[in-house]
Length: 354
Image (cartoon, rainbow, N blue to C red; front, side):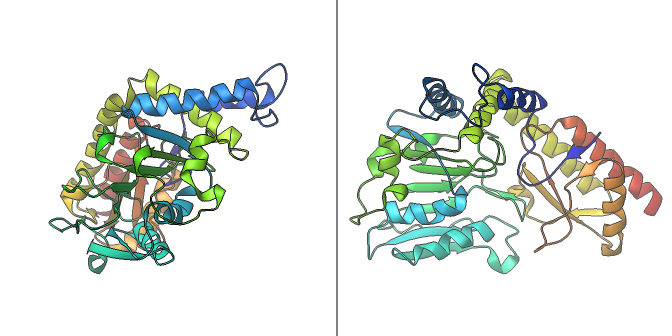
């Protein structure tokens, strides 16, 4: 058995794979989901159900729209300031990792990025606290989970400024209060579905105030009016996302999966802290439940442990090339039995090498 701890694209439930594979062969009357028109009532129903499930699972308040777009979170780095930042104004950014930094770089094309706090000097090993967000900011942007460095934001600063959040790697993994956010965006390929889809949840009233003309494909209002079908959408990715959201609802929803994610994270972090061969890399209070990053006290043992893990069915735990070490990504569909297997291997390895 293989245990998939890869950072993305994500692990998905086996039942979702089976349902999706059947639809590839026959979605309706012998037509594949890969060839059916996105304008058919059947696929329009898929989009409607997927949006309804997002709203239900996250308890999205009235006055918000759910969009299914393309281009990944990376396109959102530019779409956010393009739609929300008036020319000559500034937006406040919290710099907590590579993806936050990439988002900051896009702002210069539309205005000014004000970095209110950064953990860059510590190689992004913690989430900054006790910073001030200027009240004249067009918006405040943060990244809720940092996949490369293994940190996660579990609370938001108090502010009257509109809040924008990149939730690509922890959306649907824990209960959030959507009313505290004005725009949430997330690449689907962690907890929602396959790569190729981006989910945007936006408060309608913040749009249309940038004062600039926008290309239709980059205008949130155009996509809202088009029901996420201004152009041909990523049909298969939306369909699989719908199946995965159905699976999550059947499990008891986000509150139930959060309990499982806490249990998985606790099991692995407990072993990291207990085992003399391993150590965590970031501040304990900011440890991510989705991406557990750790190294070995003796770096010379890292390659042997990686080889040992791979030989015993563990996939995808090699750390990001920029930081090294190990990264165990534990998205919603990863069963806790996989975590127990990894923990057991860490214990066995320690017995042999300690």
